[in-house]
Image (cartoon, rainbow over all chains, first blue to last red; front, side, top):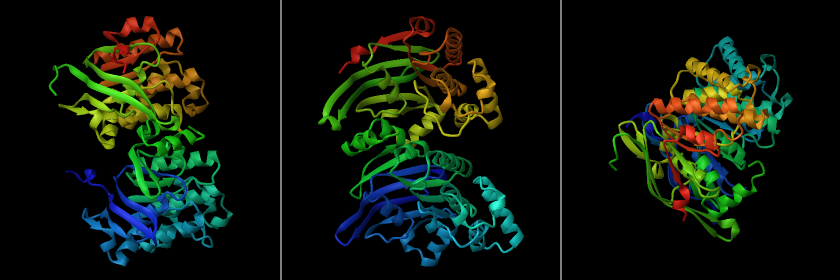
Length: 260
Length: 234
């Protein structure tokens, strides 16, 4: 079996209770390099809890998450030392939040936000950090003239692209996205989706994206997971699940989608 | 599992039923025991009144619709793959290398220009970037898409232009299995002739095609066999 056949990340029986309330229950999934996996469902379906568990920001009540490290060893993430997990999240993973204030330091310049991640992986030379930051700003279509500006002066779409640049600069293999297009104008969403498609294709990234927007899932993802009440109720090829939904709830979601 | 050496596609016992949960669980049986084969170099035409399940058959072969029973074997290199049982990742692989599909409607991708939309299909099929773009340009020219439109996203194109983009996307790649859902529906005579020519070329190179055509003239010119799918009515 070649490395490409081994999932980059996989979850088994992943469960989280908040007291007696179910956050997510018995979720199994895997994501491979070069693949976008969409997790869809309405508010309270458990999709954000799932993302927090996969990215180890939350500890599961039970179940496991395994990740294929750069040395090809598959490790149980919750058995890693805290320092190893932090290193992973600064280097090999990215996280793009709906609220850019969670993903960016708003009182640090755009260049500083991007450069910070390079320094975390050992870059020390100011000129090369700045050059690399400028390169990534250009790749996400942010004018180099804005490198010293604070993210507070950026539009919503630019902030999301800055988050992506900040994440991509350390050459991660996996990016988590939590409603990255939420609250953006449609034309701005289209630009972001186009950018993300390009990055996945060019860098062989794996992306796990949580969204309630089926149009975003359709345009961006290869496979889809539909969640409700913390459970996975349907999963499969994105176009198959959206064009021939089997479960009553998935049929309702598809029928309610304004953009078809 | 054994089929004749030249068989490329083989459906056997394929059933399809839709259950409409939003309509109180109404059960809509569409197809039952679909069975046919298509050989290399042949075009099979699916006939039958609208609603008889012609498009559903193509969608099942492409993995876009689920299959309730039976098998859909497609020749996959030296062996066979059963689309009805393939994992999502296998279906995606089959779509890149084995099964092409020209649908009636173009799903556009925002901000991607027509030439790139077409070239991407060839790249997925294994062509390298420059060749893919050259092939894409050739097809767009053959289909009479003016060059000033090539860099524009097809979302703003007319219905007929979008359909031609879709056709170019289907024929720019060289899948050994090609599914055609009314590819000539709103084309003028010249473009219809171009599509007939593309179909013949694909047949000559050994591809197996399955098509739905509303136009009897086109049908006559490309069909090697035809089958009335109402015989599979559930």
